[in-house]
Length: 521
Image 1 (cartoon, rainbow, N blue to C red):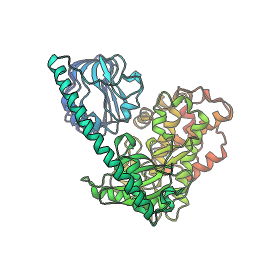
Image 2 (image 1 turned 45 degrees about the vertical axis):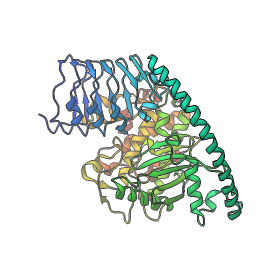
Image 3 (image 1 turned 180 degrees about the vertical axis):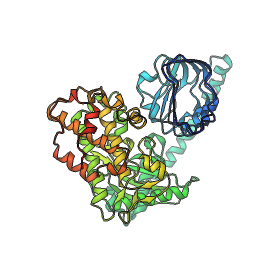
Image 4 (image 1 turned 90 degrees about the vertical axis):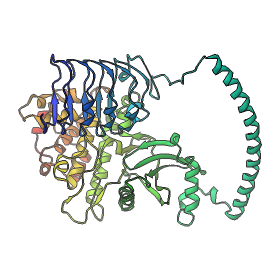
């Protein structure tokens, strides 16, 4: 009946019996009942906890199917149901949980296909291990095969269908030959009308006087936005890889212009254009052009083949190659971009959605901030109040509670991303410990070396000094008082000088010592 309860952690006890009805705990965003003796089914009422971000029911004796109602938890980021006896398929509506960043379904009796989106596709094989028969598009899992019937009637029917398909194939071949002939003739006609335009070395040189041709090339390159060309999904649209006839490759974001949120999407579209046309910076993704079409709202960016920071950190294959030098350089690149946006533009620009998914890397691991759909161009130094937006887990507390928008929102988000870079995972547990305990808590006595990403060996020499400074800056950005946060300009200046705050070895430094040091200002 605790209607205002936000976190419930009863892990590592000896609780038994059924999980109670928590339907009245509408404000819960963390529910951890792991490492107990709870049994029977997962209650359907958990699906009513609309603000739930972290759900951990691992290491119990739960049975039955995973309730389909869990697919209604739109804000869910972390899901751990491992080490139970759950059976049957993963609910089909799990593909709506686009906010998921971490899952673990290992050691159950699950079978069938996994949902086809990033949290599942990019997950390591260990989170699916020891199940009855999961399959799907994830590294280490078998591809799903359609069930083939061995019924004799089915075999006879297949023979009939084969014959029909042969006849249809002959007819189709005739149509193809005729179609190719007509197509070649139409291309020859177009070539006469528009000589040499398609051979231009840069398609966007002709954007101003022949936008229709560029638009048609994008449609052709993405095969009318076929999902096989999809390289990312965001709140306002889908990003596709488009290789144009010249060989140039671009990233094309198609906004959901015809959805119920048409007005919101149009605002995101114009926001992105307004922001990026005022920006020229090597650590901010470059906007090449845009298209407002009755069917599509398109934004065309440079293509960055390194993928998102989130993807690299969550990949067992890519993370070990993402060494400390590269990670420190990524942090510095993001700081440079934000410092420029806050201080060097004609009007300060607040991004409002800095997260690891909105930091893209090129082949040299240089960081590029992207997705300005909810950015705010400030007309003065005063704060704004606006609707609650951003990515859960990266939003500054003062924005969540007061809806106030200022440069400090980006500073807090930068701190979360910076910790994520050096920890190799989202620092939700560490942040929760700081927010829910006093300064005297043992959480502050954790050694820095135990927090750093275990994929990599501890840094040494000057690299170790840089990692210590990065950790100190991240913790300063997460201070509970926004007025105590350093500015992005101060942060970038510190990262540019690389003066170590310590003389003692990294392996001996605690988080308390980092926080106790003189403020960055």
